[in-house]
Amino acid sequence: MAKVETVLGPVDAEELGKTLIHEHFFFGYPGFQGDMTLGTYDFTEKVKQGTAAAEIMQKHGVQTVIDPTPNECGRDVKLLKAVAEETGLNIICATGYYYEGEGATPYFKFRQSLGYAEQEIYELFKEEIKNGIEGTGIKPGIIKLASSKGEITDYEKMFFKAASKVQKETGIVLLTHTQEGTMGFEQAEFLIEQGADPTRIVIGHMCGTTNIQDHLKTLEQGVFIALDRFGLQGAVGTPQDEERMAVLLGLLGAGYENKLFLSHDTVNVWWGRPPVLSEELQQQLQHWRPDHLFENIAPALKERGVSEKKLDTMFEKNAAALFN
Image (cartoon, rainbow, N blue to C red; front, side, top):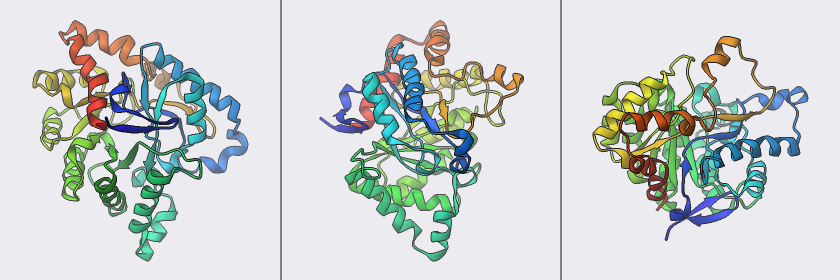
């Protein structure tokens, strides 16, 4: 039986249970490190906040959460371990980097200009997967990748190439970010061309596009896709949940329930100072919380004829299949 790494160590893939494929316990845009005087870092308080988020999910039977926070966006495996110890939740963390526009620090861009960044990225991924993250012994269960709106930049391709190479050697799952649902097919095609196994790839944020042909074309590559931003509405490039559900119903009608994941992409604790939202944006984001799928979306899907069996497939069986 296949094992998957969690922040508390390996577990059987068949025992992951009800799974959310994409939620962030702690996240910050690169640069938050320079605002920590006012942003503050209180380990005990952060654990308390993360535990509260975990317990919200657990009330709905969630047993496993994949936290794909990129390395440069505040990934903190000691905090994740503390939350897992406090709650018993399986938390799968990542090694990986965000897309260029919101993630690229000068560090690897400088090394890219010197000609050896891709090799160093490969070495980093391999070391964290083999021996653990930052001396903790905690190992990632996925590699996080991301691309820009309408393109995969040369900077981003370094990470895709390195991840494909590592996946061929280790079998680790690759999970991606698509910007506004663009480049899903191209991500899958590029990774597969590099030798990655499509059955261990999840193309994320595909609900950023409401064109079902984009989803079908991507699924035809043999990968999983994630409609994983339910509740995130109002910002540029974020469709309404009704539009997301319409696409989901179409994909279920086409028989793709065994290739779909659902989630929210919530940020439950921000690094640095939390963003101050206008009343209008607060209203638009009122359902962007880690229980929205269970409180609102799943009941709405059932009313429209989606069976409990199909929901179980998306929330439970697909996770076991992905990591097996």
